[in-house]
Length: 189
Image (cartoon, rainbow, N blue to C red; front, side):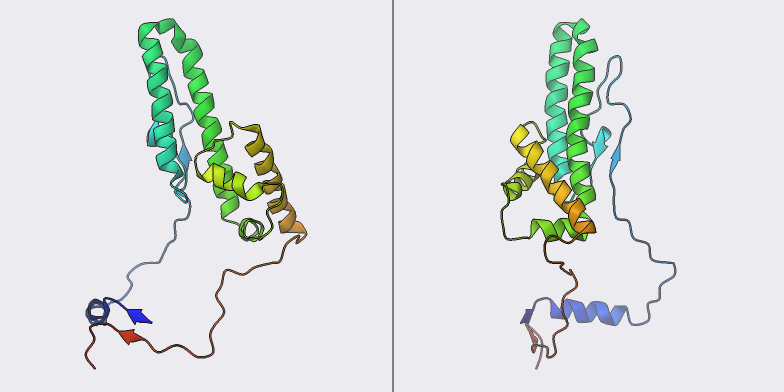
């Protein structure tokens, strides 16, 4: 195995020799948030102003572009006919919220080991794995075939939590009895 940047690592290690922690260590896991209202009399929220979903799969970029395009279409129509705002703005909010719901549910499930256990099962049952990949690719549930497969997938994740239907997995690597020698690139012999 080769380790690149070994010289930089040793420099940092030397500088940190006398370092000490001065506060508790905290972990932040989920950065998701949503605005409660996405439209008003003469405005729409789009992108991160509307909401942000934990960036596991770049869903934030997708939702920003998705909501931006929908907002532009709505605003373009309203500029020509202001009365359309009463119909188009609530429709915009409903569509964006539905898309955020898809990804929030996905992210909530992702953080469970049962999600991984079911997803990594090598058997493609009912086309569920392509449906999960479709959601990752930006399908926000506009297709019935994707929606029902995702519902089945979430049911299987729920079932796995209570009654193992696929082998349990651990995400903790097994310790190796003997370690491989490390060849340091650029290190002096």
